Image (tube, rainbow, N blue to C red; front, side):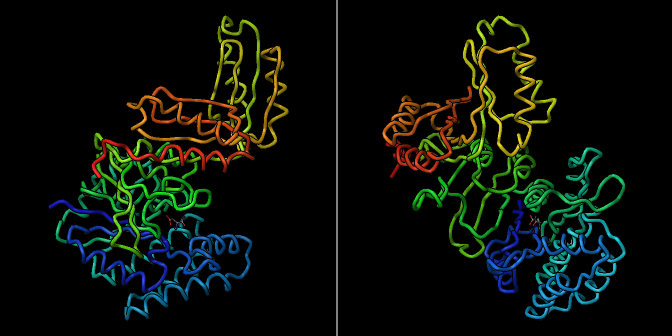
Length: 444
Ligand code: ASP
């Protein structure tokens, strides 16, 4: 029987009521056989995430300071869930032992991983499920990537299709046998790994929103929900700032052709967003969404006959590489070349880079423009439509937005536009409105 792996994010395991919702969700579909919980998140906006408290405990212990304040909060969270669900999962003893480990110098990754570990123990006790220890089943290689043997080992460990398993998210083990965590938000990756290990038919990612929206609701009023989106589109959207889920969580399931369904634990009746490898022939809209980010800067230089100068682009990029700055885009024309980088990436290196550009490339003109925003209109449907680019630029002209950069990859499912930071919101709204005409070929 094919199974479904379900990852539940921090807000989905924030208290005992959320645990009860999870049980119902699992009961509603008997294929849901693997549960990957995060550490408890915030119950309300004023509260700290458990993982943040754990990092704080570690930092205090490193400075030989008392852990009491954060540790008491951590303790209460777990003991509350345990007692409210009427469980006897040995939390008090486990927490006491854990506190000693922190005080005795446990590593930062170990301390952080206990958020998911303890939550996993509670979840397994509550669901009557088998607890699967990531320390024995999820392996990092020397370079910090997932060792492919993980899929085999974890798959074998969960081979009984009738059993329910709980695999805590966020961590595994490194080549030396030490606990190692993923980067923040990494339980999404654990969920994807678990889905792949059991050859799941679906990876459900349960969170506190009913999937993705086609634009940022802080900028566009009531944007449409995104029903179905391809892996490629989601990659572009998340790169351009749409907060989806962890970037690295896509690869394990995409490579195995497993779709991802983003669902809302608090509104399980809603279908959420389905991320698939291939979209249907006809989709309702030609685009998946409009996203963007502020704060980029562009280094532009002009030099007559630069197109004849062999190695010019390499030298230009080499300057950014030597300074450890990763670049985003490289718009160019016959005699000019620009490099767009994020302001965060460039930090205080602007002057040093300008100096190298001047010295090594001897340009006729050289300027740097800060305060740029990049916007992306993303959609595989755009590639077989005539006039998409026209729609984009007419919309921006009508909104009186000055376009500073245009960049369309050869893939044609992404048009990137650079505008002034101050035009960002206006441009997003204009593009969203212009691009959201339903496809006439889509069945009503
Ligand atoms: N608990 C970890 C974090 O807060 C991992 C996760 O929730 O995905 O980053």
